[in-house]
Image (cartoon, rainbow, N blue to C red; front, side, top):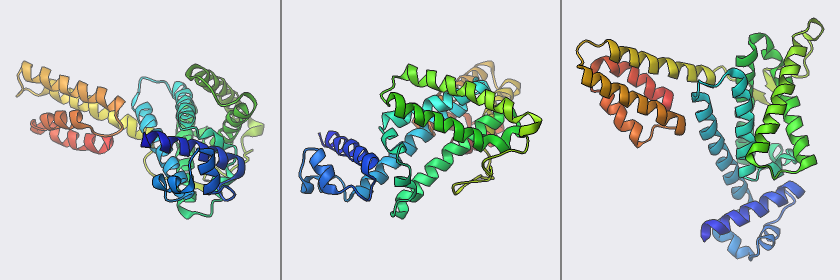
Length: 297
């Protein structure tokens, strides 16, 4: 029951934030719209800022979890990954009812609360870098300097679609929209490759609205390395002459299960931990298992 009331407060607050902005929305208004008194509101949240911060945090965690699964699925082609990233983003944003606030971005970017501003900037930065990762992986390094222009146009299409059509989209419509935008991205890429567009760019790819490009290993490279480590472990198991056929079969099955679990979980769960400990009984597998743990964190 308490969880239901928190959700009611959260959804009504997000609607008001989207309509009026955080600064102009009062706790009294949130409480009234939620069918409760102001003291009741404070039983669930310390302030409207705490409420918004929790909402951004929940959205960020959901995106991290779903995008992590997406990156680990190396069976997707680079082009398919772009579409799946957009589909995932749309589904998670809609599931958290956060599209309401997306029409009022200054509410978040210019929030007087440093924690809210930082949380939103970090989330926005992650999405830009995920998207840039996918575009560069699909179309090559030559298009990297135009990636922010492409992301800006693609994002504008998504927002405009929400405003014109509404945001109550079923999963299939989310995917259809992502496929459509994916085709637009392809057209844009081909256009930017032409000689007369080579040096034309609306944005500096290293700095967009305070979003700086990270020099850390990209998620796609990390996912590729994860795939390589799985292959190395499988090869070591097959070639280890000290293992019996039965032991090889058991180790291979354990490795297969870890791989399957990694596609469903964004961290090392209990099953994966137990299987990793089992693999580490074999000395030749330990170094690769150590790297595998780091990649799966």
